[in-house]
Amino acid sequence: MADSGTQRAIDAIVTTITALVRFAQPFVQPESWKLLPYHAATWTDYPAVGSVVPHRPSYRKNAMGRVELRGVAQRSGGTEIIGVLPVGYRPAKGVLIHVYVSVGNSLLIVSDGQMLINGDPGGAAVLSLDGVTFDTEA
Image 1 (spheres, one colour):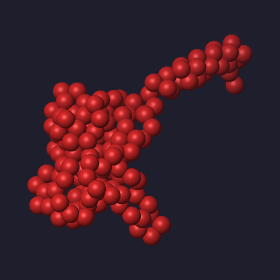
Image 2 (tube, one colour):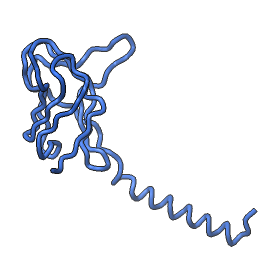
Image 3 (cartoon, helix red, strand yellow):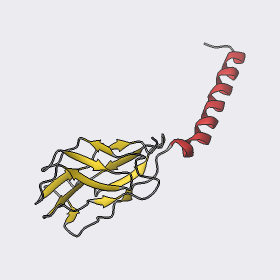
């Protein structure tokens, strides 16, 4: 068992760490999710499969300033842009990210924020954005 001096030192350290964590928490928590507006009417939210309800396509910045995407979308036809990310959530240079997509081969996000399926032959499609992350810095 620790003597009273040691216990007071441990309590002081714990109190200081707790205060630091409470102070820093707002700065290290990610933003709340924002819904990605679809660019064309052919893109819609993917429906529930039984009791599994996929997230609607959304974006946010995490505590490190990286953009995160999530959600599943479907397209009835065409080769339209999926959506456009707003300023501040766009890559400095275009990024090509491997994702689950039923047509084409990857997700292309260009520096003006347009999100497209790379190698898209057109037609119906399903796209998962779950786990996509990228930096906005060059």
